[in-house]
Amino acid sequence: MIGIAKSMARTFQVFLRGPVTRNYPDYHKPIPETDRAFPLLLWDTEIDEPFCTGCHACERACPVECMTVLMKDNPNHKSLDGTSSRRKIIDKFWIDYARCMRCNICVEVCNFDAIAMNNTWEGHETSVYDRKDLVMDLQQLLSQSRDGNINEWVPVLGQTNEEINEKPEATDESKSSEG
Amino acid sequence: MVEIVTQSNVSAGDFETQDLLLNVGPQHPSTHGVFRMVMTVDGELVKDVIPYIGYLHRGAEKLCETMDFRQGIGFMDRTEYLAAFNAELSYVMAVEALADLEVPERAQWIRMILIELNRLSSHFMFMGAFGVDTGVFGTPFIYAWRERETLIDLFEEVSGDRMMYAYFRPGGVAWDVPVNFVERVNEVLQSAEQGISDFDSLLTENEIFVARTHGVGAISAERAIALGMSGPSLRASGVDMDIRRDQPYLKYDQLDWDVVTGEYGDVFDRYYCRLLEMRESVKIIRQCLDHLKAGPILPEKMPRMLRTPPGEVYVRTEAPRGEYGVYMVSRGGNRPHRLKVRSSCLSNLQALTELTVGQYVADAIIILGSIDIVLSEVDR
Image (cartoon, rainbow over all chains, first blue to last red; front, side, top):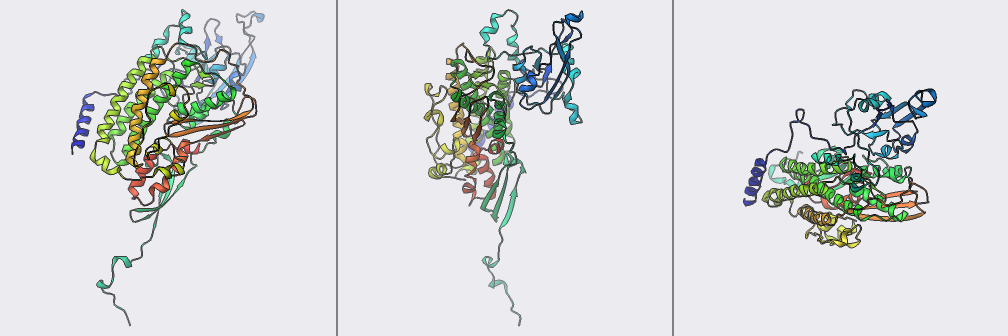
């Protein structure tokens, strides 16, 4: 009987500790900066075109083959009186979010920092009625970065905190503490 | 001539009784996944149990043979989703042994902290699910989830994902931990210790729980070894065996901690071993935090595509459920020629028939729960 009384006492004690849950639709859990959802393409705001040159590096490295990449000659290249230094640029890009396993490999192999894992994703954004709606095309992949709705976090393999702190501009590490 | 059978001529023993085939699963909440067992029951007593596995088979080992070493890490996560850091660790340690890579100090300590935290979260999961199995509906389950949530939040801050981390790399870890990592781990440990003591008073000291679990599904040390059990399920039978101490990997030999063993090998001992093991894990993590110094987290010269010389290696680590081994054969090149995962859950599951026969039907569920299987690891 003593044990059962102790159990009940502990239950009441926990009752007084206060809630650990949130009223979900009103209050969202802060997402850490390092959070990894599905890959997105990034937009170069200076030249107003995507960073991606369609080099197929991510497509080849993807373990689940969820990407399809097609490149084209850049119509905005300097040789054609444009402003961009990219000779080739992405033409069509599909990522099948239903296949993606969010392993971060595409971000690591990208030579142009053109792809990043979405760290604003709360879990309901990709709710669709049809599975084929999860195949994202170039416009959908770029739109979030073009609108500036992403604070992209592109980790460099093997970079330590000390090396990050040596660079003056990267000081937003503390953001990941709020989770 | 009609023979008249009167009441006095018949005793209960003269009625013919039939055994009943009782199918449990594959879609059954108490089988912890997609696991099916066909029980032959005589009234309330179990006479035979046939486990059927393979409903969650995805061929992860074979898939990994078509993947290079970096791509395989993601699949290893999915072989054991409740302790993915441990699964990753065995894989990357096998690659490191083949490629003869030196892991930097800091990366080793980060790995130690993360796999021990993962052990905590996995055991919390066990506590909650086991409480539901024994009929303590709700309360421990919710308490376990509360503690596991804080741990998983920390994993998300470190690795970016809540369950499929893909954070360890051959040679170290992928990127550095957040700058406030040590404070966060201390916070989480404090709440975890509180959670462990919650379970002590909720379950361990509760007479009803003890009466329900004591003496049920006992297995002797000899039989447990013969059936190939490992981990807390084996130590509950009194076998003093822990790979972390016997074949130390990472930095376990530099730390001060104890191997927890049980006595009778019954359901209660298997539960209590895990609970005590969690306290040891907290102790280990506290010591690791003192050793965590700044430094590199990957070797200086890492090739873009890692290739290993030909060879074969078997690496075993102590995962929360037992020995998680990876046997890897390389014929040179950037992918394993053959990969075999020695799953602790599959081996522990061998004991199910022996544990359950002769027990009551209601006990079969808590015996299955006490082995703590993860079906993704059984089937791979």
